[in-house]
Length: 207
DNA sequence: TAGGCCATCTGGTCCT
DNA sequence: AGGACCAGATGGCCTA
Image 1 (cartoon, rainbow, N blue to C red):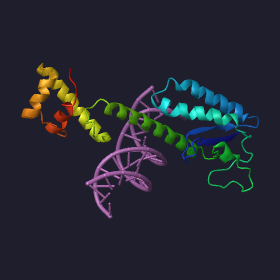
Image 2 (image 1 turned 180 degrees about the vertical axis):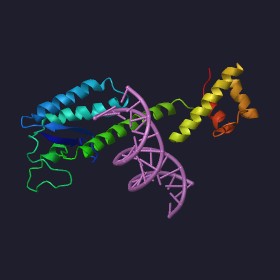
Image 3 (image 1 turned 90 degrees about the horizontal axis):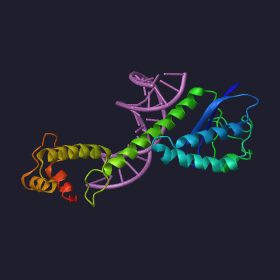
Image 4 (image 1 turned 60 degrees about the vertical axis):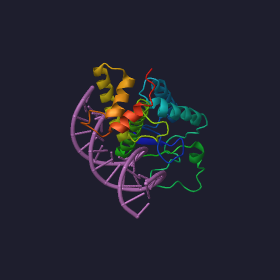
């Protein structure tokens, strides 16, 4: 038995899109196992969190295309170890296959790489949530994209103001007009001040 | 060119 | 044990 790690770079951007690792023996049928593994992941991707539609599906649809003409050899034959160069005369299907294959005898490295991928996808899901939040905070039509911290702060201020409107029982439009005229009273957390928030809200069609 | 923002990597900690 | 979460470090890009 031998530890093996495989890193895939489907889009050739130099970063690993997918990692596979485990142990292998002489009877290891690489293509069959990898293919069924990818199929399992694809089947599961529909149940995964938002990143799955963004990252996982595209990765795996690519993977299927790659696998169809992926002349995968038994690991150990012409496989390059990380940090070593492949022999120059090797028929470098690696580039053709758009696949970076590694044999790692240090399982830690492979696990670390897999953790990096998970972390990247976790950040993607966070970013997609930020995008969604940006759609719900008041923006000027000409305004450039809000940063993450500004999105959070504006969302907090927006929620606070909406709560006040509800508590006041008055018409939202007239409440905003009042704020524009007299200033927004609640300045306790004035990261977004009166003119910022109420001016944004004045763009909203309340009817 | 400095500062802000962001993506990524990484190691530590927490949770299941 | 492995994955999720978090925060620090780093480097790239953009803008004033």
